[in-house]
Image (cartoon, rainbow, N blue to C red):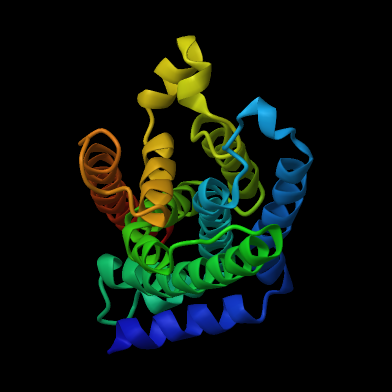
Length: 256
């Protein structure tokens, strides 16, 4: 019960943050519009499909989730700098309860972000004359929760280890890295070479693959298309969440 009260407090704080709406909701929609305009200007003879709305919507959603990581880190560092968490640590709540209090509202924000992004994608698809699979979009809302969980855990960990000045900067680096190495706006497999080898060693590209395969309902057949990326994403989320909760608890005990 105390965890839910704490989670509600964090959600209400985020809902009053205008920057949260801009980066977590508006910015992905803007990227959908901009990239769709770019796609329409590319000659059909080029055969490029990465900016087509069915591929783009999944990638942009992962791009948007990286900003949830950023705001998770900001919220944790703000509470630490104000000694708010230190005062709460005198309550019966444990470190994992506090961690859940940050994770749960951010997961809710992720679901809202997914729905808004896909509604915008449906509208854009209608405008450009493309039909999106509604079942695939609904599936993507569910299958991208592990990637959201992973990014939230990363934000929680950085928010626990860093202060309010350095955490946003480090998270911004992760945002850029996840966007590039996740193949959000380019075909990493098509590029190949050393870039793709680096991408395969990190979880970000698997998050993007899960989102795109789900949107297109391309979830059967080759294990490499959906099964492997989903497995890697889920395992990455589990590892990062456990690590983040441990780091958060130890850092809070150190701050007391």
